[in-house]
Amino acid sequence: MAERSSVLRYCDIDHEEIAALLAHFQLEIWVSEIDEDIPGSYWGDEEAGLIGKRLYLRSDTPLHSILHESCHYICMDNARREKLHTDAKSDIDEENAVCYLQILLAEKLSLINRDQLFEDMDSWGYSFRLGSAKAWFKQDADEARNWLLRFKLIDEQLRPQFRLR
Image (tube, rainbow, N blue to C red; front, side, top):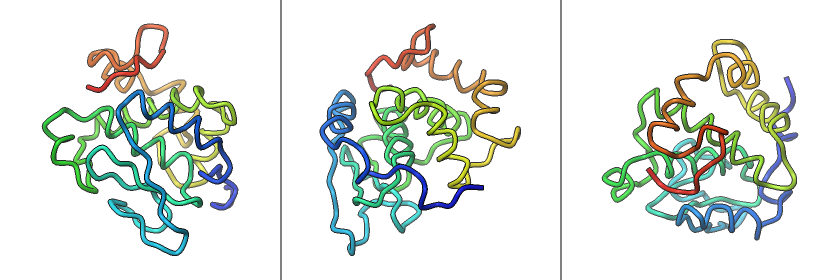
């Protein structure tokens, strides 16, 4: 298992590029100081937080956390989005769809690809029944993919559609 510090973080990526990607989904990035708690963070520490349409983070926030919380915002329905504060309140099907979509969105950024995100997810402790994010994505994620297709968040070629549920 890789060390937690080895994952890509906000300080490692192009800030304008991630802001532009998330703007497609009407999400705004708010950066806290390194010594401050992150508002809306469900897990605390350096994990990203959500309050309304704002994604909160710090320079040490892992990219996978930024993408994961963003995908919660994308995948939830409008009623939950309007009341969003810290807890996305997703069910297991939506949670799996969130994980799947974050992998697809990672490929829209210049400094990361699927394999790097798989490694980051595994090293951080995401758990999948097949033992790794990559194995899950390739062999066990049909329901997650179908969920995203049903809500038209991706197309048949697995391209994100840059819309909210």
